[in-house]
Image 1 (cartoon, each protein chain N blue to C red):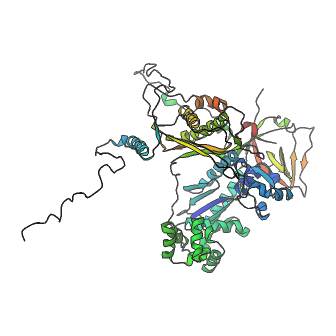
Image 2 (cartoon, rainbow over the protein chains, first blue to last red):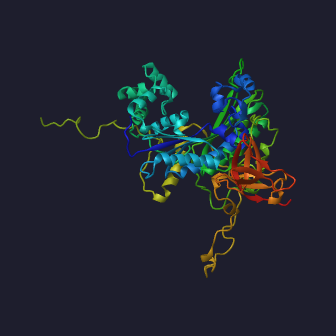
Image 3 (spheres, each protein chain N blue to C red):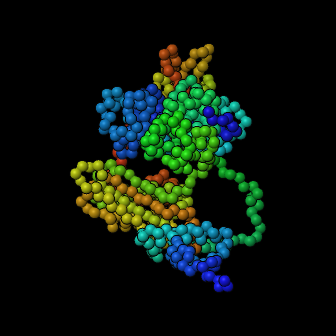
Amino acid sequence: MPKLNQQKFALVDCNNFYASCERVFDPKLEREPIVVLSNNDGCVIARSNEAKSLGIKMGVPYYQVKDLIIDKSVVVKSSNYPLYGDMSSRVMKVISQYSPVQEVYSIDESFLDLSGLMVNLNTHMQALKNQVKSWTGIPVCVGMGSTKVLAKLANRIAKIYPRFNGVFDIDTLPNDRFNKLLESVEVGDIWGVGHKSAQKLQQVGIHSAYDFYQADIGIIETLLGVNGKRVYRELYGHACLSLEEIAPARKQIVSSRSFGADLSDFDEINQALTSLTRKAVNKLNQQSLAATSLSVFIYTNPFKKGVECINLSKTMGMSTPISDENLLIPLCAKLLKQIYEPGYGFYKGGVMLGNLTPDKNQQDLFTISQKSVQFADQPYGNLLRYASELGNDRWLPRAEFQSNRFTTHWSELLTV
Amino acid sequence: MNTITQNHGGARTGAGRKKNSGKFKEDTKVMRVPVSLVEQVKSTLDVYKSQLKSNVEVFEFDANAPSLSIPIFSSRVQAGFPSPADDHLEDRLDLNKHLIHHQEATFFVRAQGESMLNAGIHPGDILVVDKSLPAKSSKIVIAVVDGEFTVKRLHKYKGKITLKAENPEFDDIEICEGNELIIWGVVTSVIHQYA
């Protein structure tokens, strides 16, 4: 059993986050099975508990479970990232009030460092759970432990057993119960043990988290290297992984999509790529970065049987880092023109801005490039478009079952 | 006994890294850089390095790139008496601050129907809804009755809960056993825009 000490971490995890977001704005869906589909309605990427118990697996292609979905009247939603993103930022903001140190780990998970807080931690985390639910409508569970790996493990328990009321501190478990718990967890489910590592461990007979826990540290280090050793030590209550409060600076920004239909016309593809470039440049500008390379890629469907997959791409470097969409969008079109070959149906495409550096705006004193579209755009709420963005919109990913963007679009508010 | 072999100590010829095998593929030189310019110099070097490394086609800036020239000194700087208002600068009034007290818990909802006309809620109005506030009696609330949204005035009296319409043409909703009631949020303001 891990030693009780000053060090204490919490992992706050939203329960079935995407499904819960849908339920906030459509309470009828409470207790109904819900699945959320990936971009372009390809695969199942989120499930409510009810959908999980129907045996719908994570990542399964939609068409494979379509019959089951109709049969059991499962509610199907296309992913609504504007909504999920906004709800996530609300949840994270509320969570941040409960500790001076927070690491937002993913869209629906956040670590907190609770070390040294002079409060009853269980009460403190119950209050967090209740406040997130009351302020945002999203249910969360909290796992606590003296290391991040243990906190993550504790969160599983908090989720599975209702008697803990959504908050569980793993350091309170007696030795034998802790060992029992580890026996019930597969080694690949330990946070930090990836799919490949799990396979390696299984080959030497380490199947459960308990096997891992009991194994010799030398064996773990030989098999998994220093990262595996860290996870091992974390299981024993020695904190090796600290909170990363600031997200590491991005090295590249990729913006890509599977198109709603196979595209072969140059203008159609250019329309898609202009839009995607603009998305990427927006991200670039938000983080005050500039790009020194631009890649454009398009390819045909690799899963189509009997047809060779065509993969076209080109990268261009720049002598000066640039961050201006008025320069990047024409460049993207130029690259696309160079790689484009008629006669193929392209199924996916995108751009990558690489070698990012801080945007210094190193322009000479007498020229200020026009950020015209972005600036002029603001009063009109993103209505302005590049001419090359206009077209038949055939590229837009399918999102047949999308709910409204309730919190980010005036025209899509909840009506009562 | 008195001959010193050249094999011990000193520089050995041919040792060390090969010339020009470093990142820059040419001779380098040590120099002092002011701290304030370090980042700038670094990023320039990074760009240079990345281009040496990847065999990408280097794009030179087009001298005719869209640009806009602005006069640097369009108005003269007054080097005289400072503005007497400088010490009294205050933030402008911000409607968001005025109307929203719990940013993370506040949602906008559009009203439809005329059941709350006398409370000043017209069809199409935008309601500012705070989910964090307690649902006290006599507050206007967004309620969910058996899965359906409605906006009404909440009345709690002797354990009986009624959702009151503010328009005589509409019936109140009495919550009976078997009804499921969730108070989704409390309406704190109405935004009514004249067409």
